[in-house]
Image (cartoon, rainbow, N blue to C red; front, side, top):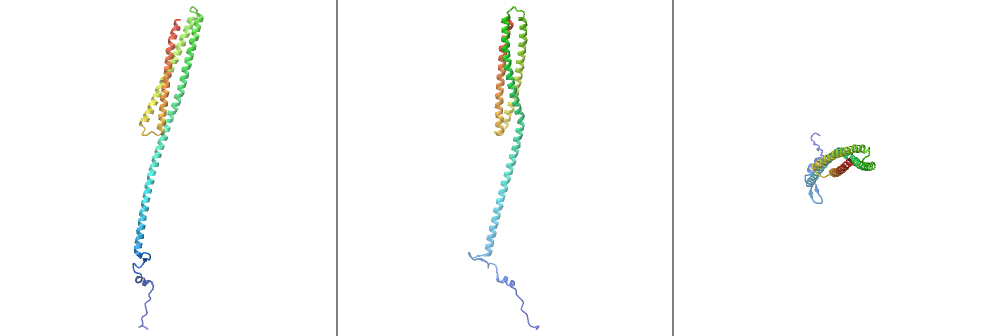
Length: 230
């Protein structure tokens, strides 16, 4: 019993190194070794990974570019809002100047009508009363006082008109400076250009009304002198 050697058990796994040697797996269709197929698949996978990484990098670059553009647009939007808020007082000033210009024009018309009416009334009274009437001197004094009052009102209106014209010129110059310093002609600059043109129109109208007042005073003075001689 002791001299008999038992056979050593051999499992199927022990035979694998001898049974399956490298290069035995082949592609049945093309008769390509399995190791070559694995290498090709690995290369394809690496190429695909590189392509995906490149695509991801491109997308990240585009996202960063879009983020910068959004940031610039937000800054520009804030700047436009700030400019719009700064222009609100100027718009209110323009409305006030328009209203004041209309009031001064109405005052000028009333003064002109009043002066004509007084001239007609005084001439009529002088003709009716005659040269030797006792009330002639009194009428002349009243007429002189009224003349002084009318001339004073005309002078005040002209002074107010001069101040208004000067304010309008300053505002017009400010708008011109803003337009000259602008980098591009955006919607807000177009609006400033329209406001400038509107101010120029108001200045011309105000200057025209001032000239009309001066002509009215020039016409009234000779008539007053004629009345004094009557």
